[in-house]
Amino acid sequence: MLFSNRCKYDIGFGQPGVPEGDRVIIDTVPDKLPWLLLPHDTQCESLKFYDLSRNKVHELNLPEVLLGGVSVEVSRGWLAIAKKGQYIRDTKYSSYLSFKPIPDTEIFLFNPLSGAIHPLPSLSTLVPYYYSFVTNCIFNLGGYNVAEFIRRIELSSADPSKSIIALRFNEFEANNCGNLALCRVGDRCWSTFPRETDRDLEFGDIMFYSGDLCVLSQNIEHVETHIFKLAEDDEVRIKFIPVSTAARLPFIEVEHWGHNMATIKHALYEPYLVESINGELLIVVAHNVCYAYYDEDEDEESLDGDMDALEEERLGEGEGDFEHFFEEGDHFEPFYFEVSGFDVMEMDPNAGMMIWRSVQSLSDQLIFLTSGGRSVSVPANDLPCGIQRNCIFFLENDNYFSEVFNDYETREEVLHRRVSRESGICYLESGRIERLFPSSNRLLKCKVGWFTPTP
Image (cartoon, rainbow, N blue to C red; front, side, top):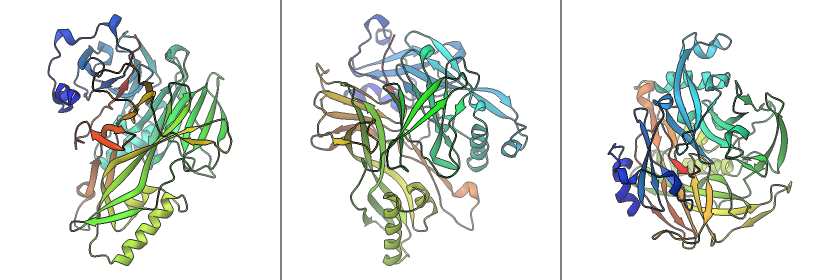
C-alpha cells in the first residue's frame, strides 16, 4: 500500500516533481534493500527510484551525454543506458538492410549516484544480428524497441573497468534462443559466442558466479563448459546449466470458460539465476498460467490433440518451444501470461550431472527477482516496517506477440502486441501472491528493475 500510494503517478507514467527533501544524499544511501527503477522514456531528464527502506522516491538527473537514452538493464549498481546514435548503412549484409540506413544504438554503463559513465561497444558491432533485428521489426511491426533486443547485461564485478561484460540479446527470428556476446570496457566491438550448427543451444538467464559465466539452457542434459576468448585474448569460462529437471511441472491442465477462452496451467515457466546471501547458486523458477483464445468451432478431439502436442513441447519431446507452438497452432492464441508461483532450487554448478536441493524457506533472506537486470538476495534481518521475510519480490518486462490470420485483413491489422508485465510479492510459506500494480497494456522503451545503490 505504501508503494502504491507513493508511486501511483510514476507508475501511471506521469512526471510529477520530486520534493527537494526526497532527493538522495549519497553519504546516507541505505544498503539493506534495493531501489526500484521506475518507468521512464527518452524525453526524461532524470530517473526516479523507489526506496523501500525509506518509502521515498529519489530523483537523479541524467548527465547531458545520456539525454535521450533509456535504461535497458540493471546490474551491480550500474544502469545500461541505450541511446540512439548516428545513422549507419551496411554493405556487407545488404540483404538485411536493402541499402537503407538505420540508426545505431550506443550503450553506456551509468552509475546514477557517482555519475560515472563507461561507454560500451555500439550494437551495430553485433553483425549481422542487430541489423536483422531492426530491419525485421520495422518491416513486420512498423518500428523497433532496443529494450526487446537486449535481454540481459551482466557485469563480472561492481567495477566496470575491471569487469567482463556479458550481453544476452535477441534475434528476431529466434526470439527465445537468443545469442551471447562479451566485451570489456574500451573494446571497439562485441565478441559473439559462436553458435553450433548441429544443434540449437538456448541462452536463458545469465550470471557471473565464482568467476564463471553461468548460462541457463533448456536443450542440454548436463553441465557443459566452454572456454571463450575475447578480442584481447582474455578467456572466459562459460557454464551452460540445464534447467529442465529443476522446472519439471505437473501435467498440463486446461479450463475452458466464456465463449472461446481457456486457462492453461503448468505450461510455461521462466527460470532465473540468483546468488544467495550465503554464496549458494540458486535457480528460482517462476510458473505461469496462460490465458488464451481458442476456436470454439473445433471439436474436443482436436483440442485434446493440441494439448498433447503442447505437453510434448513442454517436456522437451517435440521440436520448437512453447511460444512457437502457440504462434503456429491452429486453435490456441495466448493473450496474457500470469505468474502463479515460484520454486527455489539450490544447485552445485561443479557437478556435471547436477545436484539439486529444493529450498522450502528463505528464512534468512529476501529475493528481488527481475527480467530487467540482475536478480539479488538480501538479508532478512532488521527489515523496514511492512516488509516480511521469506518473500520473493518480482518484476517482469516481457512483451509477447501473436498473429490472428484472416484473409480479409492486412498483415499490419492482424499483428498484435501483447503486454504481460507482472509484478508483485510471493509469500513462499503460503504461496500467496500480492500484485503491486496492474499490468499496464502499454509498451515501454525502458525496463524496470532492482537497483542496488553503490556510490
